[in-house]
Length: 328
Image (cartoon, rainbow, N blue to C red; front, side, top):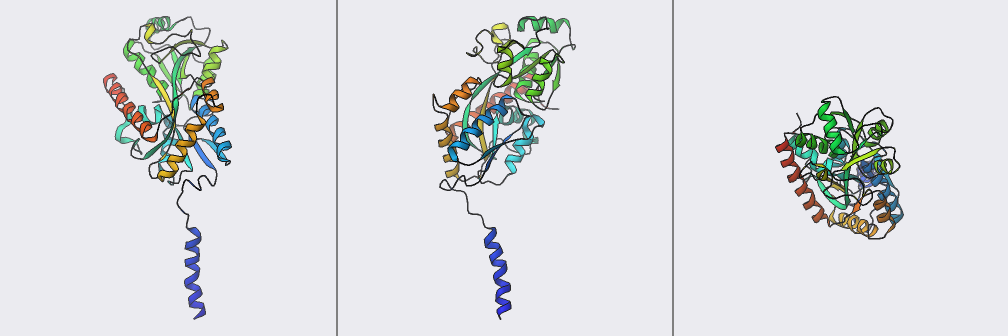
């Protein structure tokens, strides 16, 4: 009788020991949290993620780690996040590429639904792209670059963080509007493209203004020809917009946020949102760090953030369709 009772008790004990209580706002986070980044280190998405991770580590007294999973224009990190346990311990630095442009290009072929599979825990802010050239490039403005490209079709290169990302698609849109033909050189991250254009291996590059591009243009290592937003950026007021230089109606502004799985308990989502909004308050250390990196801080509720993403998907779906930029 003793042996029979013990045999029953052991499996029950094992099952009990494997039980993990659901995450709640009271005990979250009780272990390290990871923020996935879909690009190589050094670009705007990576820089933003590391600033956020450092601030959250201090606020939560728990390690928040950045994990780079570059490739497929950020899709690898996004897919991993969608498939992770819904406990709030796997976040992704979601952005215009992963949750707006890529869904617009690939639609139902993606392994994740950009809205249904995610919770939009915290919006961080917006950032334009910037088009840059090596100082040896004869073009001193975007108008001159376009004229040069028209005179040398298919002979001018530009680098980006990868196929289908916001930087790449902003140039595809520019080519569609202006009729120029320049050759795309995709990299596994914005920093790699930036390094090659600074070394003179490629003539031009496009990337989020945040991070390396801002310092490269400010220092004169690269020449900024145009920002993709509707208005000039206050960090580089001398660099005109695409619209100012004849690319009519052009306005591409990226955005950053923290996303996680849709089934993460709502109290945890609420806590992440509240803690991030507190860290991003005007004049805070994180606010200052992001503003220095050309990220315009812009917070929202999870519902407001999701509504923004939905409107961006609709906008980019129309852009992709009208410009015939769907993925083949």
